[in-house]
Amino acid sequence: MFQSLRRLSVLKNHLSYNPRWCFLSTGSPSVSVSPQVGLVDECVKIKLNGLEAKQDITIVAKVIENGVEFESRCVYTSDEEGKVDNYTSSSIAGTFLGVEPMGLFWSLKSDPPSRLIKKDVSSPVVVNIQVFDGSHTEKSLEQPALTETQVERYFKRPSVKRFPLEGRFKGTVFVPEGKGTFPALIDMYGGLVSLIETRASLLASHGYVTMALSYIGDEMMSSDFNYILDAYKWLMDQDYVDKDRLGALGLCYGGTLCLKLAAELPQIRTVVNVNGIEINGILEPDNDDVWPNKDRVFHTDEGFDITKVFDTDYPEFIPAWQHGAKILIISGEDDKQVDPKWHPSFYKQCPEEYRSNIQLYRYQGAGHMIEPPFTPHIRRIIAGRKRLRSIIFVPEKYHDTPMMAGGWTATHAHAQEDSWKKILDFLEKNMKS
Image 1 (cartoon, rainbow, N blue to C red):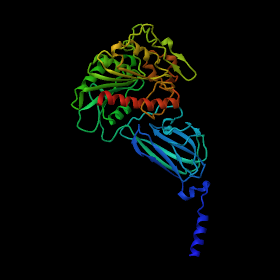
Image 2: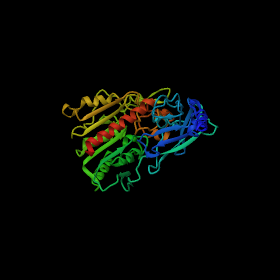
Image 3: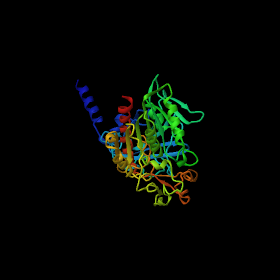
Image 4: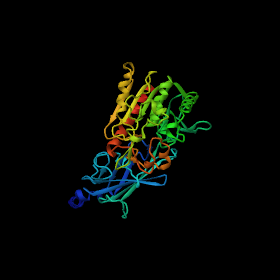
């Protein structure tokens, strides 16, 4: 018995707790993510184990999309148990700082700056995550990773059906799983990209039939509103659409068009306008080209700003309220394309009996491109001469210049996350219920 006690004493000394080397008891460094496969608007938990106590480590995330590499990174210091948790640990350096659970995703950047757009929504955005020893804020990393993993982020659930439109209308319809009928939305982006399916497929993944419509002609301001109106009427006639639960959602010029649709069609019960100007004349510019006024495009050190081209002393607002539609407005207060002053003006102009149908959320430090959560922020857009030439109020001298969108990365990311929750809640309350 005494020999057994002596052996236990020796064993106890060998296993005594040493905070710096506690990783030896848990094995080599490992990283886990949850969920490893999920929708792009889901939060991801990242946990590291098996590190030394108080060890600095660098996490690097990389995405390659459309041949462009996007990268983000952060530096964490492990706790006394050699652990890092993206929900509680604070980044001390990198593309974001502080406790930001999804910072690795929304701070992804390319060089030169490019907008991350997923063209094939049936395939995932693949995020490769590597963990390196030490603090590395510069891009080059030649040492081997301590551990690595991969996350797959989808805009479209596998069960969502995708139908490309044929014939007169250009775009795509996404239909949720099940027999239906379903609430239905039209989804339109702004004037620089002809068709984006990401938000539409994500909305379908949340239970809404969604039509992503391509509507831009040779010139942005010359888009045919009757074409958009007819496309919406076609959507209403589909067997899988609940004709009593109809809505519209748009960003920038797409938001303006959604308001116009609600003014024309009493069947539309909900409208979400993200940074779209509410002035009526933008759809029918004057022949003398006085408004929008291209002389009010001005240069900044970062790019050109167009917020003042729509200034007018006598704005005629789109009466989107007149049939009783519920309206949600999302405003980026650092928007460099649409002056945020127009959103509260629209609210004040609304007749008092309809004003309670309008909700306006204003986000300080957010720019123009408020998209679904965790979408990487881009402060300026390098659109290219061909695209900028299609916007009639942009002078030719700016066609090779970046176009400002505005916003600051962290505050813009927070606005995207919060506004998406508000959009889904708004749609749930006014369309699904």
